[in-house]
Length: 208
Ligand code: AP5
Image (cartoon, rainbow, N blue to C red; front, side, top):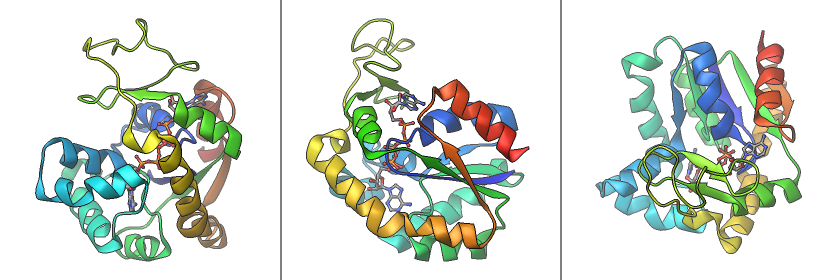
């Protein structure tokens, strides 16, 4: 199964992908996670994109496309994948069409108020990327990762100004992909406002 997860920041793409990858036995490829891993490891790419991510702007298409092309060539992605956060522009979607043929594009639909609530309450474990929410999915001990015991942090781009910018960038550059994929007959809309278990269930049903 070759899937793209589309939707505004904070819609729950990463949360659902972490479970869906087990359902389908395919890797979860998140461009945001790949960039953050490069930043954490201090690579040249990481240095180049750090300020872009913190501000909530988009990394240039050619950099992102090259990174995804390399990742899709790895063995584990041959039989299928969940692409989370890519494509985010029409140019990226056109490039992806030249790399592979998608089965479906899942569009996670969530209103703006819920998006802001989810993003502002998100906390992550920096070393593993595990994601929590202070209200909806709290850790067992406040501020501490359940498995590693490390302190949880707030992503730089989950601060108020960056959230506002990410929503504007989403509307301007990424939302047009909804029509792009609907026209191709690939789009499946999923109501992302329910619990993660319900969202996953309705997606699996819609894809079957
Ligand atoms: P990326 O990491 O992809 O950020 P995003 O798309 O903004 O998505 P998020 O990770 O913020 O949200 P999500 O939908 O995965 O939600 P989550 O599951 O965490 O990208 C970061 C940056 O990298 C970009 O801004 C850009 O700079 C760069 N970048 C990445 N891809 C790029 C590309 N293709 N081109 C150019 N630049 C690119 O959930 C959010 C919160 O809600 C969590 O706290 C979670 O616990 C909670 N939650 C989730 N689901 C539910 C639910 N059903 N009910 C209640 N709470 C829930």
